[in-house]
Length: 474
Ligand code: ADP
Ligand code: MG
Image (cartoon, rainbow, N blue to C red; front, side, top):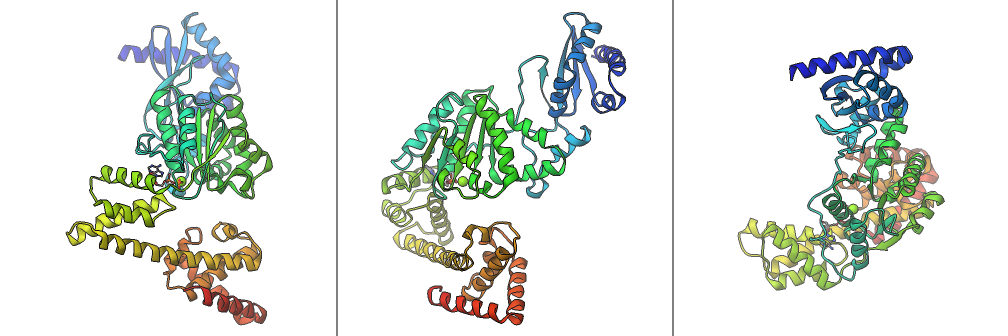
């Protein structure tokens, strides 16, 4: 082993001399100094590079030089293999920053996670990039209960999973209201592909995380690498693309990635809370591409499907509920499977808290609580809708990050009204405005109060809105 290490060093040192004479000092310093020889086996020299960009860069710019040099040192059979060190601490400065990913949500850039070696690439060999697919293994086809509400989407998903990129369903766009199984189905497809197509690189990303990575990449001047990275994915799942709305730069970058993937027969799966044609703030060229494949929706499940889903979940968590309780829950929670899971958890919790079996009375109580809290949530929505209507802006802007003046005022005003007209906590109000914290809500209320104190017309507007809403909001 020692001897082999020494040999690899000797050979690499000789290669380095040749390379140094062939390229500029700066390039040499950037791209060759960080390389370490790892071992030599027969005529195959393995070198270690800090990361995948590095490898790609070498392959793109220096493959000819490397090949010639290796052949000179090791003969015609000479070959170079790469080991990629996925440890950010020893990578090039640029790649380092990419590897850091997005500290905001504590998530690393997918694919740069493991702090260890991964499979070597072989020039001019096949790529085996091990990317963390970011899939939730719990979401499978087996536990995605079929019903009329999801039949088409489910079978299209299965078709895509069997032949990613090889069907007419590219992209596959799955849309539907919140809590109806878009994310579950998307993961199920990813998991199925991973299982049956071991050589395919799968990546699931929320649109939010995708956008954050782009912001980070722009900051680090690493957007080309970002794009190149995504272009290597065989199955890309982008969840909740409605959040691409009004994000021009992200849309533009996604457009390039989309085109490349599609042209090369890679599979794209998108989910959205509305049909592509209803996506506002989205470039037309993207929308038209979304329609290239298959667009399919998830509907609210009928009673039988809800019961089948609930029973499946009960089995999974190992509890039994009397049939009338299951029926009662499924009768009352209709439009959102996540909520159905919510009431199941709640009743299980109640039963264990009171140490008595769940019965109809308990079910009624849980459902009553549930409906009450969703009605309160509704009243916040109602305020937002009314204010948005008054200012003639799209209501989702109130929950978005934009800091444009009229929107900021409308948002602050909605928070002010929510605080005055409902008994929701500042925390809950903040959450209803795109996850802002309670200090933002307090600040907003003060800002509105200040403006009312100095601007008579504004005061009138606020008081009018407040009066109207007081009649309809509890
Ligand atoms: P969405 O992404 O559409 O908001 P999710 O995929 O997060 O919805 O689904 C919400 C919850 O409902 C998840 O826990 C999921 O497992 C469950 N669910 C949705 N549809 C089904 C189904 N057909 N069978 C079983 N569970 C489902
Ligand atoms: Mg989802």
